[in-house]
Structure formats: C-alpha cells, structure tokens
Amino acid sequence: DYEYNFDVMCKKAGKGYGIKKLLKYLDIPIEETMCFGDYINDYSMFKECDITVAMGNSIPKLKKLADYTTLTNDEDGVASFLEDNLL
Image (tube, rainbow, N blue to C red):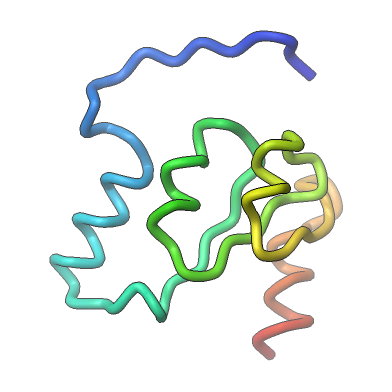
C-alpha cells in the first residue's frame, strides 16, 4: 500500500469522462453500466456508472461509494462477482 498518490493529467483524461463520452458515442444508457475499481483514480468512473463494485483491496473511500464489494484483485474478484451475479 502507498501512503501517498499523485496523478497529473488533463481534466478531461479521467476515467469518468472517458466512460461518459463512450456511453454517448455508443448510445448505451447508464442503467446498463457496471464498473470495478480499487483506487482513488477510479472515483470519477464510479460517478458515471450505474452499478459500482469495489475490489476487496480497495481504499476505504471507494468502498464507501461502491454499491458492492467483491474479492481482491489477486483473488479474481471481477470474475467472481460476474459469475455470482450475472451468470
């Protein structure tokens, strides 16, 4: 774990902005979206998706924002969540 994180990017370069543009381009309603994340750089993405899933190794701030929490990255959390909830 890192005590500090520092990302420098263009305002429009965040994951949330990218998802918002992609959904508009592909004409996909937000109600048909799901995203997975584990760190502060996923915060904007969580604001743009309908169903949000924090990984088990996520930072506490993201877990609070998430609709669900799954296993860690090392435990194949994304696959586990999809198998349990979509298949």
